[in-house]
Amino acid sequence: MQVLIVKLSSMGDLVQALPALTDAQNAIPGIQFDWAVDEAFSEIPLWHTSVRNVIKTAHRRWRKSLFKVFTSGELSSFKKELRTVEYDFVIDAQSNMKSSIVTGLARGLKCGPDKKSVREYGAHFAYKKTYSISKDQLAIDRWRELFAKVLGYELPSTAPDFMLENIKWPEPSIELPQHPYLFFVHNASWDDKCWVNEHWRQLIQIAGEKGFDVLLPWGAEWEREQAELLAAGFDHARVLPRLPLTDIASILTRSAGAVCVDTGLAHIAAALDVPMVTLYGPTDAKLIGAYGKNSVHLSAQGFACTPCYKRSCSYKDYKGPEAQCLKSFEAQYVWNEFEKVASNVAVSKTVT
Image (cartoon, rainbow, N blue to C red; front, side, top):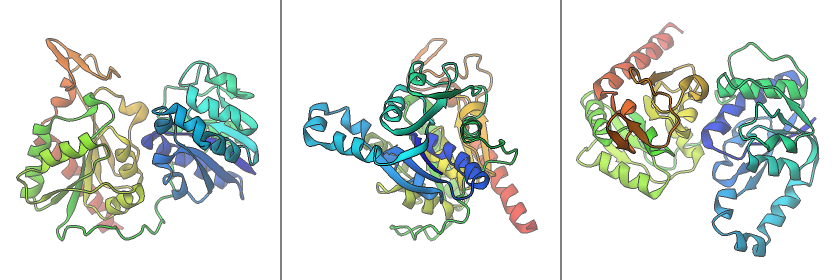
């Protein structure tokens, strides 16, 4: 059986879909997936053993220069590759307008959530078969349910399996610290999903006092500048170069743990079973929380407006980019919660 998955972005969303592939692989021996995905995240699908091929889109880059896209032939090449195979099923596991357009161009039985279940109304018009998928559940469970219904097997009751545990990750392309190190993921796509710099610097100081080095990743240029500010003055903190996601995953597996805001790398760290805590304020951990055996969610308390899903904060007299609910997390509290997770993992490994 050949299946095309259409899930273009984002990083966390792609990771959350991996357990659905594992379910399908276990239920249907020999099933193979191709995956239409944005070029920025094209490494992630290939981490799963059932993915044969990725078909790269570049919609984030294309929309910046539509004229060049049409004249260069890049779009027509993508369409040709997308339509090379007639699939048994084409599953839109993103269900917004962008993914539905790609789904509509592919060849095969087009399937996705029904009009009440799609992320963006109208996407369902691209599907030949639709399914009711509850939105009131963790995103991982949504995609597991969709794949089971489309491909016709019983939804497993087992815990999600990302199939990352037995990967032999390559040696990192950079020299790692000699001391145990932590991974602090400070950047997010929304300003108000970010923790304030003051608290990050306090946490970096605490980590150093406890004997840890700290690595700071980044994606966009402004994130690199923020990382430089966070690391300034700390000999034990280092800003990483911009790295491929596979390199980052390899570095994470060798780390002593991670502290993250709600962003894509948090999902990768969680799926790799790294001891970690993730901070949630404007978003709901019950629906989009980073899932893993050693992952703990810290959700802001005492704010009637959370989760607001707004990209800027408006709380009492404050209006601006700093979510006041996230700002309420003190660095020492976050460290204490991380130590609990790391301690539980250490005990578990000793018992094993």
